[in-house]
Image 1 (spheres, helix red, strand yellow):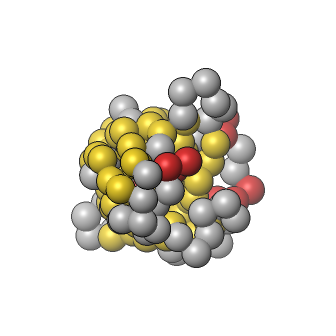
Image 2: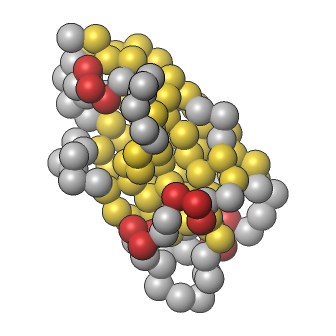
Length: 129
């Protein structure tokens, strides 16, 4: 699986950015896509995830109400819409893929980080106050 992120950049507090994660090399419906972020000196943390087979999504409570995750299976792409950005959202954002059974209801929130076996190169998000 190849994953390519795009859409990062510089934003001011309160502004929005949308990250994209384009997948190739595998049937998209067999993937859960997770968004992770890592700031300098901090541990990587999962932000959101979605099952590409059914669109069931999960967003961490620390970004709930501000971030949403969606998918476009026609484009093999998952999006992370980030609204009302805060300086503490500044980090490198990664998307990652985990294999799932496309015929079963997905629940990506139950996936451990080590179950994601393909990672994108990351895209930087910097939010100024």
